Length: 420
Image 1: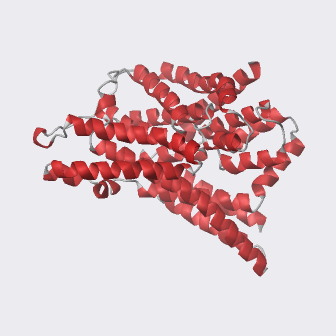
Image 2: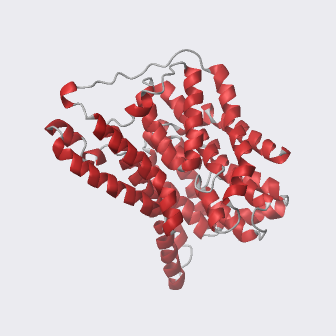
Image 3: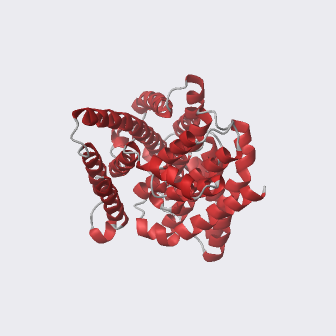
C-alpha cells in the first residue's frame, strides 16, 4: 500500500508538471492527487481504530493547511484592494528603470529585503502585483516572476518571520532571532546574487511598460489612494507583530488586517462615484482572486500531508541519517528534497531526530537549506506556488529557465555558509 501511495503521488506530480501537454489544469490534478493519497492511506488497514486515527490526522493536517490557505486568501484580497484603489502607483511611479538589467536588480533586491520583513509568500503576492504594473510583455514578466521566487525564498531564510521553516525552528527554541540574521544574511544574499549576475549577462534591451488608462472623472482621490496603500502594506507588516504579541497563528493577523482595511474602504466608498464605488468594493475585488491557485495549494499540501502522516517523510529523514551521516550533507539534501515535497514536515522530522542546543550550526544551516532549496522547482515553495498561480507559470518552463539558476545560487549560499 505504501508503494501505491508513492506511485499515486509521483503520477500526480507529473500530471502537474505536464499540465500544458495534458491540457488538464494543475489544480484539478493536485486535488485528485491529494484526495487519492488520503484514500489509499485510510484503506491501508481494515482496522476501524486505524481509520479513526487517520481521520484525526487528516483533521490536524487540514487545520494546518486551512491556516495557510486563509493566510494566502487574506493577503491576496489585501493586495487586490490596494490595486483596486491604484495604491501601487505610489511605488511604480518611483521605479523609473526600464532597462531590463536595472529593473531586474531593483525588483530582486526589493523582494529580498521585503521578504525578510514580511514572509516569502506575502512578498511574492505583492511583488507579482507590482510587476504587472511595470512590465507589459508576458515573456519578460515571467522571467522577472522567476527571479522574484528565488529572491523571496532567499530573503525569507535569514529572519525568523521570513519563512515558515525558520519560524518553526525559532518557536521550537532551536534558533534565536539575532543569531540567525547574523549567520544567514551572507549565504542568503549569495543565493540571490549569483543567479542575478548570470541573468544580467543574458538580459538586454528595455521593458515595455503597460499602458495605464486614467479616467479623470472617475479618478480616485490621492488621499484615498494613499490611505488604502498605507493600511494595506501596514497591515501586511503588522502580521508578524500580531503573531509575536498574541502567539496566535499568522492567518489570524492577516484576517485582522483584512478586516480593518475592509471597514475603512466601506467608509470611503459612499464618497466615491458609482463606477469607482462598484469596482473597489471587497465583494467585487473577491471576483479577481485566482481561486484555482488556492485549490492547487490545497491539493498539493493534502498530498504531501498524507506522506507525512504515513510516516514516509520521517522514514526519508532517518534513511538520510543512516546513509549519509554527516549533518551538513543531510541539511543540503533536505534542501533539495524540499523542492519536491513540502519543507515543513522535513524540517519537523529533522527536529525530532536531533537534540542539539539552541543556535547550533546544524539548525542554522537547516534553516538556510530548507528555506532556499525550494526554489529549485516552482512547486517547491509557497512563493513558487503563488507565482505559478498568479502568472500561469508552467512547471517545465521554470524547470528549463530557472532550476539551473536556483541550484547554482543555492550551492553558492552553501559554500558561503561553510566558508564563513
